[in-house]
Length: 263
Length: 271
Image (cartoon, rainbow over all chains, first blue to last red):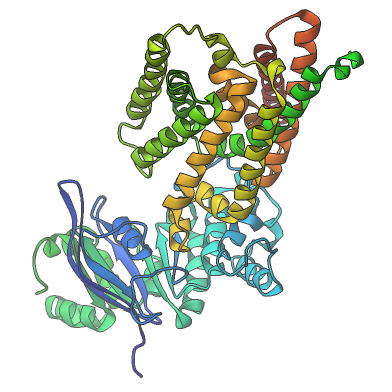
């Protein structure tokens, strides 16, 4: 089966002032990809997601989206789920209104939500199992519930690429398992990238790992198997590829990537 | 008290309070939820430069203040959009320089002794029919623009990063918001003066925040509160022969303290 390419990153560089954050990033994301983005603090993981989402502009290089025709317009193509703490705590808004924001662009000016918009909003909230909270104020919810509302908002955009910035930071282990199972179900129709410090749970679902530390190196499942099998000999048969990476993350794997090409 | 409605100046004061309330309720809500109080303070104080400019070149003070406030708001917008570094220092500098510029121009205006107090503390009882017309037009502009961009403003106010991913032109909307703040300030200068206009932009909206579960409800509650404070303040200032602008503000402050005390008391009761 041919891979359907959703976005391409070409020769991307980004820095905050004098501080180089990402250097010469090249990456291609296909439909069905479920990628865990890992790396130490300050390595550029969240920055990479913001560059893909169009929130930050690269110093040089491009992020191109397959629709329409690999342009740089990311509108509604990318669904971004920020870290929970970046949301204004006291803002007067209900759960339903937050998810409705995801439909902006679909609803004409001076018109109410159409039936299809409301159906999509309901579907997103039900998928995250929070439909019953729709009339609650956001500041009445727990951290985990808020996170699920933000995910529902991203789902409501009908984006082709979903970007999650540390969704596990305010969700317990059960919640994380449930979230990744849901993402695994919907990944067939889109691509998912998840920034995380803890890949112990997500490793069961992902199709690749992106190691970020100024440079970006992408490992597919097969690549991981081949590379690590050499290093570990017989042990390779006893562990799944992501378990192998897990044992070395973040220090060994990332250290070996610092400024070097792949071995 | 009812005999007051027989006077044109009082009727004008009530109508202008209604316009002020619409502007304060809507723009004040956006100032509060977007944490732009200091930015609004900078625009309002710097707009005093417009007053000085109008007197020096002998043009209509409303036109002078409107144009100057719009320029200052767009300058502050350009310097503060998605920048947090030295934000307070930049606004502080513009705040002070605008006021200083205004005072110097008034000093240099030959043979003119302007009543500075009316610009600092307002003159709601001296609102003319011409002022009312200007305030009505301004309120209508604010109302229309906010209705037109409501969804975009809501998205940006709640989560600007996400709004960018939706393709919303966040910079354009930010500049429109800055321009609306400037227009609102010109309306408020007539009512409560430069010094106190920040209080009217923030206090009703700050009280309303606790009783709203949506942005438009917060705008409506803040509008109603602002009108109630204005009418009560006007009435009391007439009875006690006090400055009307300052009395309106004191009413608002009392309401703010009472509402916050109630919330704190309720929280303690619940826990």
